[in-house]
Every structure is written in C-alpha cells, then in structure tokens.
Image 1 (tube, rainbow, N blue to C red):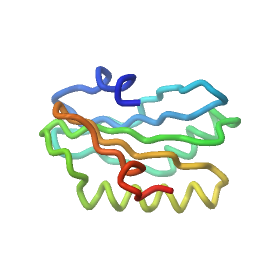
Image 2: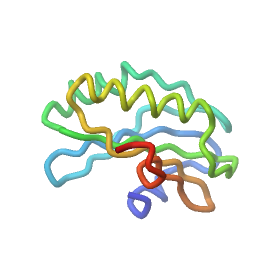
Image 3: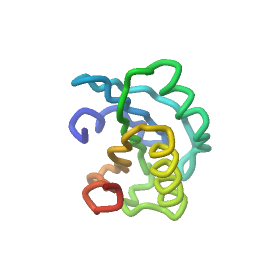
Image 4: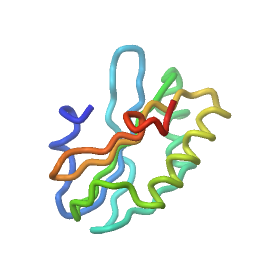
Length: 116
C-alpha cells in the first residue's frame, strides 16, 4: 500500500483516502482534504461512500498523511481508528488498516497490532 500511495499525498495539506477492497482490486477514493495539521473526518461519509459506490467491497483501508513529518499517530488518529474498527465490525466490513504517511516513511496500525 505504501508503494501505491506514497506519491498521491500533497506535502502541504493533510488528505485522507479510502481504499475499498473489491475482490483482488484496490480502488483509491480521496475523501477529505485539510490543512497542515488536521482534516475534518466524517465517518458517515466514509461508510456512505462504501455503501453507495462499492457495495460489494468486503474490506477497506484508510490512509492519510502528516505533512508536518510526524510519523507517530495523534490521539485523534487513535480515536478515529477505534471508531472505524467498531463501526466496520457492526456493519460487516473488515477494517484492514489505517496508514499514516510522511516524507520519512509510514505508520501502520495493523503492523503495530492495533487492528486485528
């Protein structure tokens, strides 16, 4: 995912992408755009996009960047991950990962054991 996504991010603005997994194909859907250190994320929009545009997607990934270069997740990132994980389970989706990109590399919640 890192190799596919790393060139998509704007180095000045925080962006959030939804990556619905449909069969073996990965689709990239840009959902939110923010400022240097934040983007307003509406969970209803995430699930509306999944239901309306990708009704056969069994799983999804969320990816966003930290233009400031901080690789560690913020408390808001952690909160979003917990909420997405719980909502996905209720709605029958598999939430595969939340990935944070910077110019130094990436942070994967799945790799850290926070998403099972």
